[in-house]
Image 1 (tube, rainbow, N blue to C red):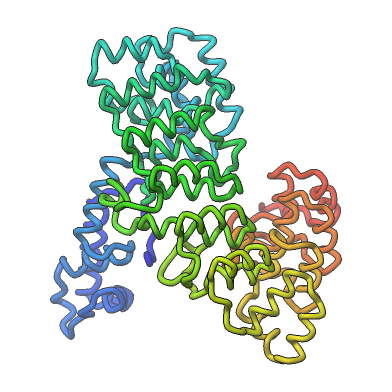
Image 2: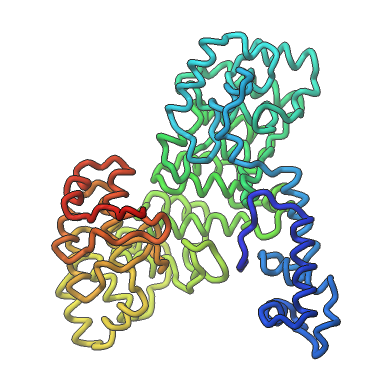
Length: 511
């Protein structure tokens, strides 16, 4: 796993300088540099530090960024140079009306996304109705079929030209546009078909801020993401565009689409992609370009884990019916929210108290898990089953202590996934109500407290219960340095904000 984060705008010269600096530091005998080589190079450091070759230092730098070798790092940087995109471009206004329309009209997968931005794009188009006449990128974003047709006829090579404020090609602007939620279907579909027939690549994509998962045309079609469907919605004509791209040869194994859409229980994106072969094949051109992308089968296993842990039974059934492996344990490296911890899907369902999913998987042939007191205790607690908790504690006196040791942030996860009675029971069992954890996945990572999540969700009843149990309203989360009250205000939750305002200390004068 990488220990260094890839910069937003990586350049090979920067990594060369890092390698040379490491070589000089090792030759000078600096302990930290010597330790880096010892940790990442299979041959370590020889007795004569002055002999470290530049190639060895380059190898170490590559490994620190998660690449198997220097050539693989350089290949990735070449891919970024060709396909990279800086989301910061979406924040700066431009003077040209056509360019500004493109900037405002499109999803950027940044904090700038949202209906207010697209309303500005509509207003700009009203003020400058001719802005699409000479700009094929604006014409595509506005789905102005007559302008797209004429501009392509004048210069067919425009179909492959990168331009506009983001340096995208015309079809990408069309697919990522969100300026009009009622945009008519026919000009959108016909303009997209015209661009594809003229040679647009159905697998076009960009690496946003050098992240290794490509945001493709399909990603733009299906939309969604961490900011939610209001600020990052699907394209209004997503189904027609999706079929058009898939019929044109777009690879359905689109990891970013799967990630963006996994937060919602709706499965329509999966149904369409599965129809076109999601989970099969070699992963397409992006898998060939980028080392480390998941295989098609791995992508669907990640989806299965998320669905099991987030109470999405319809998605579990859909994936199982399409041949996704629901019997094997999750092993090997995975995203932080989907670790290879050796648990099977049935075990994970039981750990979350989800008997519906667990029973379904068992009925489909999954093996029943071996007895495990800690898992069974947590399972009973998530069902708020006090009698079973008491029985397990009596039969296995060490189970509770081990559960608290291995899952110190469990109450944070429970606050987002389980009934209030579960949170109460966990607190009574000695789980720290002020523990830090994650509320989006059942993994141990010290991000925020349960009170942060109840406040952000606007759950006044749970917020009161947590406060009664001893939750501290002045604790700050570890990512944004914000209190639960700050979270309530940020997410516009007046009910929980009203509860927290009288008991939250005002910021100090230095803040």
